[in-house]
Length: 422
Ligand code: ADP
Ligand code: ASP
Ligand code: MG
Image (cartoon, rainbow, N blue to C red):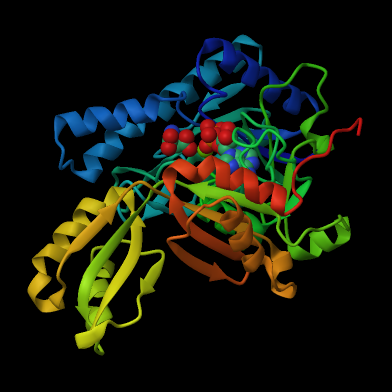
């Protein structure tokens, strides 16, 4: 017998029929003799709809009230799943974030899990009751509803798994595992049997939205065993205990699996960045700090930065990227400081995309970046900015070339699936 936390995403929960399918998967897991807790997302599209209502009601919405509104999507699906499980003859009840409670800290709309009082959950599970929890939502220190940022139900699931010391956290979604790149873009993407926490963390942080970045960081810290798998399966599909999906594992476990490893594990893209160019910034100590300190103070995450070679007259151009959602704020903050920073013009461009290649193999293998630049150049794709880390290379390109670039790189690094028949 094991203790399993199962998470179902928005597409899996979209409507009565799909919830019934989910309930059957949950029931089967319990019938296999396991103690089960389930974390659910709102129905697909529902959170977007609720966010829009907030915007319409008040463009400068109070994040605490935003949380009250957007957390409701998960309340509905949690209740509906409990009802459906009961209709199948299972003992089940829902537990809202405040009832567990899932205590969170930091700001509304991007709260972080601090502690989960799991005693009552564990008692219920041990008594054969299926615990159904809404993902995404928690309770603030002052007793208000919070949410954990978009895609946050993944993090709720991992946090619950850690709190109840689950043997495994199964993340059910609309694809059957983690692929070498988004399988909706590259038909020849290959499913990975396993991927390390470190690689998954990097892939998620550069745009592979299959898992929320924070959920991977938390799983790595707490040593939670995570599997990504599909909820769109037939009754005779192999059970989750056979590990049909992708396992997120430690480096040591990966070594033991002894799989053939490539230098590049996966490729991700992100269309949510925007480029900012400040022209004719003074080329002197302190100038760059004058630009980025106010952005940091406003919690705006700057990603790529390029300071061009100084022009004549001690001036230079500075290029950087910020999340598209923060572009307007960035522009306003910099305009307010035009005098003190001393730049000439702000040029912005939202029509950009960041393409990243990720792989632990890069640590010991030179030339991965050069291969990327050459493959893109071959097809005439211009690179506007570059950043690297120990296991990642990212480039900024024109947004219209996103899909093409991902496909080219997928082939260039030998990641394309080969036909079985070939
Ligand atoms: P859920 O609603 O279940 O949380 P998401 O839409 O958040 O699902 O994440 C699943 C989606 O992630 C897939 O449909 C797929 O298009 C996308 N995706 C992006 N990169 C990858 C990847 N490397 N492997 C698998 N899926 C990926
Ligand atoms: N429903 C929330 C969202 O769409 C949380 C989640 O599904 O993970 O962001
Ligand atoms: Mg998701």
